[in-house]
Structures are given as structure tokens and as C-alpha cells.
Image 1 (tube, rainbow, N blue to C red):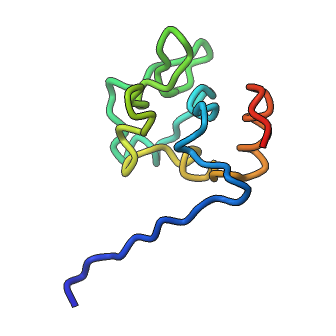
Image 2: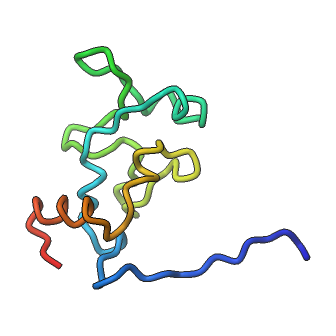
Amino acid sequence: MSGDIQLENIEAPDGVSCFNCEACCCRLLVMLDDDDLARGVPHGLIEEDEWGGVVMRQDEEGWCAAVDRNTMLCSIHPRRPQVCRDFEEASLECREERALYGLVD
């Protein structure tokens, strides 16, 4: 056994997929905690908000600074914040955000 992990391509229910989404979740404000910082979220991608909290930096259009706008993938996926890990594809929260952007499943 080589120790490699076999990955499966699992399709989300009802055709909801991060790959055909407008990445609505990537425009939400992402608060960071000490565990996120310890995980190695790059300091160049974080900033302090107006209340003194540590958040992911957003560009002028509101996109998370970690999103590669060419591929729409997270450039720090292995080190992404916990809130991003918890925001599951096709979850109720995902569908609610999609609806706010007019993306109806």
C-alpha cells in the first residue's frame, strides 16, 4: 500500500456544483479565528475589519482575495478557514446564497 488516498468525484444533489456556480459564498465576509491563522492562512490575504476583527481580504468587487478569478478555485484550499470548510456545496446555506444572487436550482 502506497499511502495514497483515492479521491472520488462526487456530484452534488440536483446539479448544484461549485464548478458551475457564481461563487456566491466567495463574496461573503469571512471572519478568522486563531485556529485559521495557525492553519496558515497567508497574512497577505487577511485584514482587520472596522471592529478590530481579523477577516479575509476582499477585492474591490467583494470577492475573497484567495479566489483565483480565472479558475474560480480557492488558491489556499488546503489552508482555507474553517467557515469555508463548513460551508458545504448544495447545503441549505449554499442554496440560500445562490437564491440571493438569482441562481435558482
